[in-house]
Image (cartoon, rainbow, N blue to C red; front, top):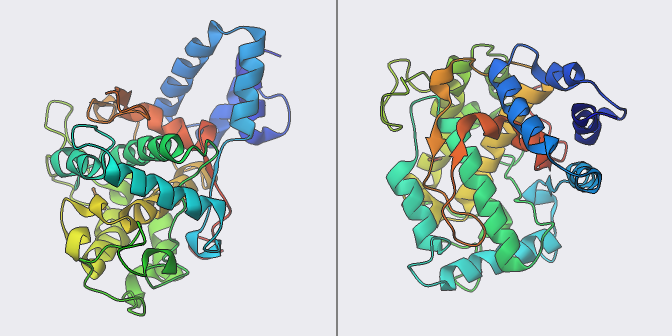
Length: 317
Ligand code: C2O
C-alpha cells in the first residue's frame, strides 16, 4: 500500500485509498492539495513502522464531544478542569499560563477577515495539546458547546470560584438564554448553505496586510452571526479581546470549528484557493511552552488527521 493510500485508509475511508480519494473530501480545494502534499513529503521519509504508528494514531484520533452529554465526573471534564487549574498556576513567564494564552488572543487574533477560522483552529489545537500535557491525559479532546441545541451557558461552567471553569465576570446566569434567531437550526442551515468561502468565513485581505486588517468584504455569516452573539451575550471577559480568560471561550470556538468541518469536509464546500490566504503564524506555543510555527493551509487537515467531532446535528438535517 503506498503512502497516500495509507493516509486515505487512516482518515476513515474504510479501504485502501488513492490520492484522488483523499482529495475527494474537497476536490476543488487546491490549498488542501498543497497541504496534503506537505504531509506526503513528511511521510515519504518514514519507516514502515512509523507509518503504521501514524495510521493507528489517525484512526484513533481524539474525539471532540458535546459538553452537555458529559456527566460532571466524565474524564473529559475532569481533565479539562485539571488542565485549566494547572495553567492558572503556571508562572506568568510560561506561555502556557492561563493569562499568557489569553494574551496571544489579545495581541494577534484576526477578526473580520478570512484568517479568522484557521487562526482560531490552530489556537484551539495547541490549547488542546497543552491540556493533554498538563492533565496527563493524552487522549483528551476539547469539548464543544452546541448552541444550536443548548441555548444556555453549559452547566460545567457554573458553580463558584472552586470550579476552574467558572468565570465571575459573566453578565449572564445559568438560566439566561441566547437570542433564538441567530442559533436556530434554520439560521445555522442558512450559514451552511452559503457556498462562497468569503461570505461564509469572512472576507479577503492581502498577504502583505497585517493579519488584523479588516477585510473590505467584512465578516462572514458565521463570524458576524452566532460567533459574535455568543460573545456579546455573555460579556465580561467574553466581551473583549481577553475572551479566552473565560473557559467557555474554548468550547464556543470549538463549535465554530465544528461548523467549519461540517461545511468544508462533510458538505464538501471548498475553502479559498488563493495563496494570499496561506499565512505563517508564529505566536502559538506547543505543549511544552516552546514557540512553534504553523501555516494556515495546514489547519485544513487538522480535522482529518488530528481530531474529529462526535456527530453533532448542525443546520437542518
Ligand atoms: Cu478571536 Cu470569538 O474570538
